[in-house]
Structure formats: structure tokens, C-alpha cells
Length: 105
Image (cartoon, helix red, strand yellow):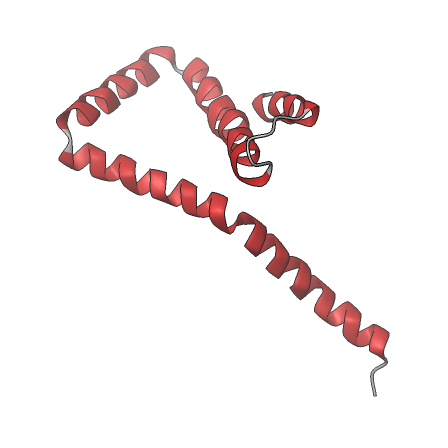
């Protein structure tokens, strides 16, 4: 027979995972929505197609510099903006500056 402590340690990882899924649901939904909108804009809106083609030309010209910049935006700037918008309800904190710098570099 299991003790209450053994039952608690068995369910604790599951509870932590559920809490993480709940915390990331809205930001994940926002990211998925933006991705779908970009695809729809590419196929249904000519100016978006032209702009994305221009972005592809810049990528070809800049090479690794573009990869660094895109990584900084996708891995640092956008996640921090989502954190400020969704989790912090628009309130900027000093910790955001450190997180942004870490995400960019």
C-alpha cells in the first residue's frame, strides 16, 4: 500500500504539467493564429505576398546576419512582448529587460 507522500509525488509532475499547459495556452493560441494569418495573407493578399518575397530577397542577401536578426526577434523580442501583454497585463518590469537581452543574445 502506498503512503500519501508516494501518491503526491506521483501526481505532482502531472499537476505541474497541467499548470504549465494552462499558463501557455493563450500565448500558444496567439502564435498559432498569427502563423495561420501569415499563410492566409500569402495566398489571399497580393501585397503580403510581395512583402514576403522581398523578405526572402533580404534573407538571401544578408545571409547569417538575417538569421541572427530573425532569431533575436523570434527568440527574444516576440516572447517578451507576449509575456508583457498576456502574463503581466501590459505592465513592464525591470526583469523584462534582462529576459529580452538573454533572449536576443
